[in-house]
Length: 217
Image 1 (tube, rainbow, N blue to C red):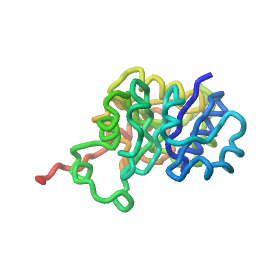
Image 2 (tube, rainbow, N blue to C red):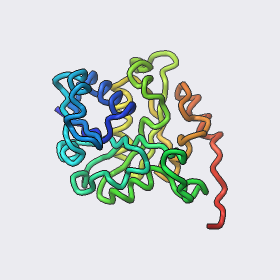
Image 3 (tube, one colour):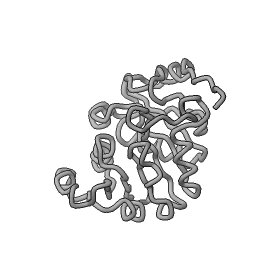
């Protein structure tokens, strides 16, 4: 049975855990405060979930989901995730994370930053442009009319394909945006961000995305 290591047990992490367990996965979930603080969540998730430290979750993972505030991304364990696919759900909120000029000026992407932090992992964007509550309520079977679509992006084909598979298993179509350098198209304040859209509409919204104009530092 495939085990997903979830690093970050907030709104997105806990909902991804619920959806993944329903789809048949085992989950090892962590947060920054310690496994003992996750007792209620794990009890709610049931026997296919257990709490652990971030390092333990990374070690147990066949693949991982990183869903921590961007300002904390450098605390994500590196060595235990080497050789593994890592799904990055993160978004940049300057109000929370502090100003990051490379993002403000359109010179970098959130997931590109994580990929550099995890040089031996294969990072893919996922679950960043959907409200947490919708992850477990908006899914529909494949072929359903107006099935909601979500985007992924990666520099690695197998990582993007894994996200595609996971999306489909929990009820969503996929649009592959391309490499991580294009993942800004589904970041905060872009047309595709946290709106319900089918595959055709998502493709259209991606084309409408406008990036910040780089300025001299």
